[in-house]
Image (cartoon, rainbow, N blue to C red; front, side, top):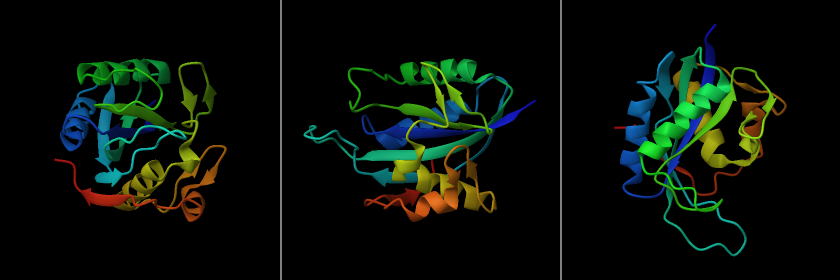
Length: 171
């Protein structure tokens, strides 16, 4: 049975808007997956640790797919896309060509070393919540339940935008 999966995309290196576009094209080609829609492109300041070095702004988006792949198999495919686009994993807060995070896999809750569902910090990231909200609006979805966190509409109320801006559709 196919599950709806929300995937967060982020990039701040090597023409980030084009990196997002390439990743979306790759997501559309995944086996046993059907692309449904995306949020469009948002721009946000880089999230940095205390005292971290300044970075270029990020471009972000959220994509909805349906898949019959198991979560860890889907994660493997997402990491292949990242690797193909030159993703390096130097350190936790490093700039990146592309980052693909599985945000939600249906209503599944999972705590594996490689994957936490819902995404471990989904409730505190404006560059995830606002694109997710825009995607739901595009799909005429009234609201979205985030397992263990509540409703998206309630989470948005306590999440400042932090200069996050919508910049347009994904090319």
